[in-house]
Structures are given as structure tokens and as C-alpha cells.
Length: 511
Image (cartoon, rainbow, N blue to C red; front, side, top):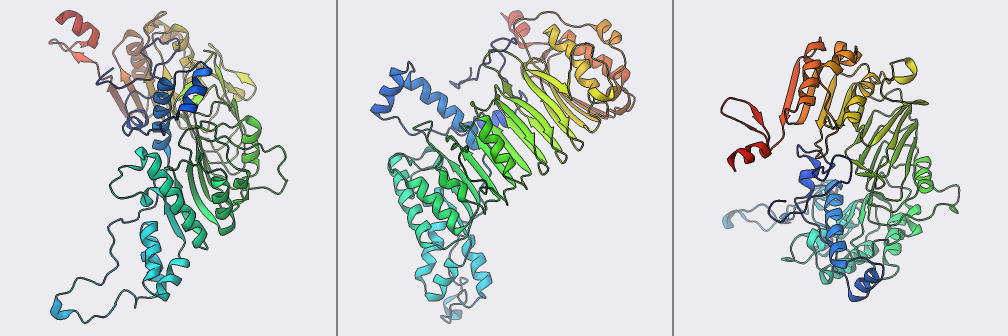
């Protein structure tokens, strides 16, 4: 650890140094930048967790890390200016004729101006004149709770409980006063547990008045705050992100419940079970983008959708992914995966004729199935074991674990037309044997490498024998490769003779 920062540890066979995430930065690195605090536990909550055998201090630290990752995934609100001023252009006194030029603008332009103001400033324009009140009431509202925080209280990611309660009161007043529609609603700073029924009332108002984009995140505690059933009345939604809430039971809902306009859905740290996930997908006929993050109760993600185009999984915990029937699905992005029992989880590709991007697949964690065939070491390419539509493939492999590395040729043969390969090398403290040049020569032809691979990016390269053997095989076999990018692991050094060394060996020599 460095500077007191906590690293996420993995219990996979790769050993304690494995962090599961992409080591070359990006999502995992950036997500640890802002620390999103949960609200401090009260005495009753602390006592409840102690009785359950959990340390409140440790739990709060873990939740802070989880909330940090969750907030990083949330889409940004539309741009509004918190420095906008409703005044005529600054004119010299001798040229100021006292005419209110802004109010003389066409109403459509005034609505555009008001829509770019923070919610509280937009509401204040209603006090200027009767016309301005009509403008505010007829403008589709952008409501971001961070804009309602008192001046000087700091970031909305670190809001105090007292400030959060003031924000809740302001939100209620705005939802009551404005007739809708609400173009964008971003609620991440509230503590709704202490006001029973408040969230249900908000969702009911949004459902009646019409909301298009909604970002709603619970700030624990509790961890299992239930999403009210009034949520199912929001038929106008086009984009929805939910975080740290318990998804309501869908078993007894009327058949007519649906999200007919929903195109983008994010479920982040949600308590949602397989049945309810299937319900949401079935009742969202135009859904194109699905984002799943760390939903611990979701064990099987079964993709049956004629509209889905992109699925992104960020930290799939014990999650099996099955693409059953998704004729328009183009991208399945799996950032990180983990299994608390150490067993493999299924990634099954069924009917997905448009799938062009897939990964990260990990032989250490994933059991790959193509159709009804489980891909094993030595599986030969055939029409029933290949996905020819995939052009971009990402793999995460531990070359120091022999069984993982031996699966690499079989995985690659499943995607014969790959043109871009992103390969990340995981490290292990417990190597079980590294494959040499002989293995790759005996592996035989791999169609994608030999005939289609144009770009390969090799991340976290350490210069180990297994990595070098595979790299040599690619360079000798790839006929159309035009670009090779090697991203060295940060701890690598070169000695005076230009030889690649690990940081451990360098320290050993210096010591």
C-alpha cells in the first residue's frame, strides 16, 4: 500500500497481489480518486451490525469504497452554469437606457436560458415577473440535488446529514411547484430513511409529471433501503440509474407495467434477484444499454432482448452471463469479475449475430460456452464453437498459472475473425508452471492470429517467460499484424545492459 490507501485484495489463485481490476489505470484507478462517504452510522445502526458479528468501522470503510466506485459509473448531469446572471449586458452608464432586454427575448429562448440555470436559480426567476413565472413553469426542469446544497458546505459526495435534510425539503418544494416534465433528475445527496414515505412521494410526483432521465442513489444507512413500488409508474423514463437500493418484488405486478421508452439502464450495487432482472428486461422493449455493477444477489444475467446493443458489467460478483437471444447486441464489456467461492462462472454466447466486441474474458474465472459447447483445453474450432462476428476481444490471463495459460489457444479459436486483441497479464505469487515456446509451436494454427489480427495491446507486461513465449508466437504467426503496443507494468526497470527486471529483483540487488 502507498500513502495509506487501501487496495482491494482478491482471493483468486493468482495470490494476494491480484487486484482484479485493469492494472493499466482507467476505471479502477480513477474510481478511487473521490472518496464518497456514507452518512455516519447512528448508535442503533452500529449496535445492530455488532450483534450480527460485523465491525461498524470496517463496514463503513468498505461501503465508502463501494460508493466511490458506484458514483464513478454514474453519468454526469447536463451542463448548467452556476455562474449565470440574469441581467442585461454590462453597459457603460451613459449607454444604459434602463430597458430589460432579456425579458424582451422570445419565450423559447428564455426557456433555453432557464434550463441552463441551477434548479434553485431557475425557480427564483419566477419572482421577476408574471412572464418569467410562465417561463419557469413551462421549462422542462433539470433537477440536480447538489445545486441545492448551501454555499460552502463542500462536495455533494461528502454532504453532512443536516445539509442533506435541507436538500430534501427543497426537492419536495420544487417537485410540488413545477408541473413537469423533468428532463433530468439527479438525487445522490439525500438521507431519506428519516422521513418515511418521502422517496415514494417523490417517485409518485415524477411519475405523474413525467421524468425522462433519473439518477437515484441511496446514501447508506441502511444498506437495504427498499425502492418504493411507485417506481413502476414512471413510464416516461428514457434513462435510469439506480444505486444501493433493494429492488421491489415484481411477482405480483400487473401485466401492463412496463418502461416503453427506457433506452439506458444502470443497476449499481442493487439488491436485485434473477426474477426481477428478467422482468425489467422483458418490460423494456426499446432498451439499448444495460450497465450492471456489483449486484450481489444477481446470479444469472440472461439476455433476451431484440433491442439491446451494449451490456457493461463492472465487478460481476458471482455472476453468470448468458446471451440467449439478442440479435442486435454489439458489445458485451466485462470489466472485472469475482467469485466468492473460487469457482468458475459461466459466460455463454448463444444467438448474438451482431456481437462485435467481447471481454474481458478470464480463463481463471470464466467457463466459456459457445452455444451448447463448453470450451475446454484442446477444443477444436468448428461452426458450433465459434463466434465469427467478434472483431474486438479482450482477455485477462495469468501466464504463470499453467492451466490458465493453456486455455488461451482454445479461447482464441472461438473468435476466428478478431482484428484487435487486448491482452492483460495477471500476476501470481504461486506459479504452477510457465508455458514455453514448444507449447505454442504445438498449439497449431489459430485463425484470428494468423489471418486477421491487425492490432494487439499487451497490458501489464513483465517480460516473464510465458509472456515472451506467447509474444514470440504472435510475431511469428501474425501475417497482417500492423501494430503491437506493449504496456509495461509500473514496477518494471531496465538494468545497465538493457535487460528487463522486476522491481523485486532490483530491490534484491540494491539491498
